[in-house]
Image (cartoon, rainbow, N blue to C red; front, side):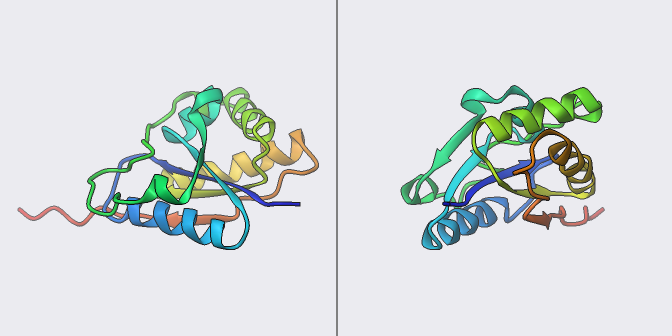
Length: 142
């Protein structure tokens, strides 16, 4: 069975997010996986549908020099509730996502824990998040 990897950026954007997305997509394709963007982070997972989009090799060409994150990011108050977490997982499972890589800061990574728990409660095929990439903004100089 082909792995179907979801990748999301969540919270505030930080340097290197596009490079991480590109590396995940290309490494996944090289290993025979299908990779999907979860656009607008956890909010996109809650909304599902067009927010979960297949990414190909050329979709991540030319993104290294772009600021922010090309797949979008958003903070989600809905994901803070159990209902929101279950809805996000339901949408990911419906899209066939069986692995999830979250790129973000402390809040994004903390959110992955209840997501994994909700996933196991929802689907026997759900696996814990495949990877958590912590990003940090550089310190502000005064």
